Length: 336
Ligand code: IMP
Ligand code: ZN
Image (cartoon, rainbow, N blue to C red; front, side, top):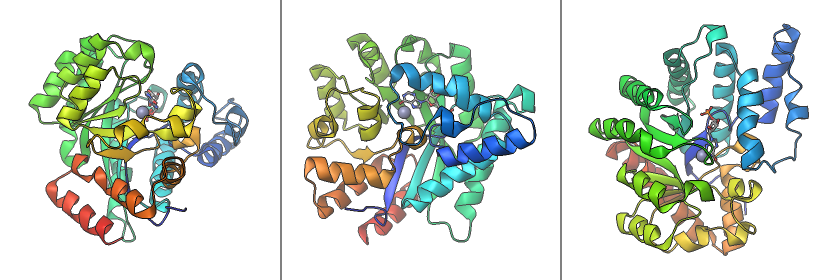
């Protein structure tokens, strides 16, 4: 089954991880012609068909390669526009893109400048006459951050809220960091009514009872991955009916789950009443588009077209947008 034509929402997509290899290659070609890079070709660094990045190779791919290639305003604009076009071409009608504000000192770009640049691309995409997709921006706190950096992310979100920032995320290598230090940041986000989504129970290290209870204290509106969750915490999640962002291919390729697609915890969560949204996480790295994720779920969990349409709509109530936007989406997605 092909679900490109099905109107879909995507709520868990990291900007730098969503850049296609072709787009990275184009950026590299321009830089090489201008003598601005000594990096190897992205098509050599990330050969097409290679998706088996695990937790040990995935995070260094950004710090060692992608961030060194996309390190100026021109590449930020080019890659953001490309990511937006790719999601729209795949039939996404509502997108929440997330990114970690990153200063690019050599290019004279501050974190404010970074956020403004991404927001301008999003505004241009939202306002384009032929646009069929609405996008909002989530700002990510990285688990490696110190508390002041995390609070600064919340401050940026508050500052740019009326220009398209819709919420806060906690992401980064799940094998590092102590999430309890972020309490002041999440308290500030809540006090300012900023919606919160959190990477939750991604790896055994980040799935202790202490960590997960602390993260739930931060009152997230949605949680992502939800892989290694103890029974009592599952009960709490179900009781709260938290929105779940599930990333099938990413979890399989990165070996975050045992087994393959049919063993994914989507099977456990699907009948719990928690709204589920299928998400790509990092389509540039793992290569599976949103429509492909729906096809995989249909195939491995035996969902028919009607059940897939219901699934596609189930996350609408959990998006970080006004009731008016939700209502418009219900109308678009119901008539499909
Ligand atoms: P960026 O925030 O736009 O730079 O997107 C890339 C960043 O997203 C990476 O450096 C990670 O910190 C984060 N990220 C991407 N995928 C994952 C994931 O599966 N788990 C946790 N963090 C992630
Ligand atoms: Zn993620």
